[in-house]
Image (cartoon, rainbow, N blue to C red):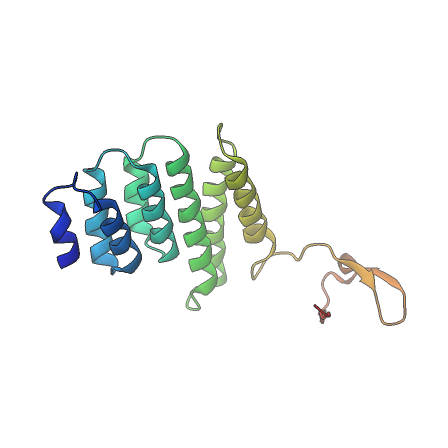
Length: 179
């Protein structure tokens, strides 16, 4: 990419970070891969690496994320990269309509494995800890093939019920409301 060529000659030049961020956000996969190589030659810049990791996760570039995770030292950026990898694996398991139920379950289990390791780590910041717990709950309870979470309510006759009372039966739950 020509824009990147302008700054790779002198990485200490003012504005290099902004150009790299622009390429990360607007470039194609190959350009992002090239930017990743450039980032490693810069002085340590966690904000730039976080931006890179988040965009890789957004575009589901798992191989690139795995490569970055392998190079990163333990810490906040590596934890964020591993979370983005788990999120990407989980999303692929749900979006890919060609997967069998067993393949989908394997993808979900891979994501849960990443999340469990991450959740047990020392020094996990509160925000990431909550996102890990939320994604783990979603992948284990709210995806196709999982047991539905317990729901309690009142039926149209005013009788209390629990969803678990209907286990093994077909249940239609219409949700609606005024917001």
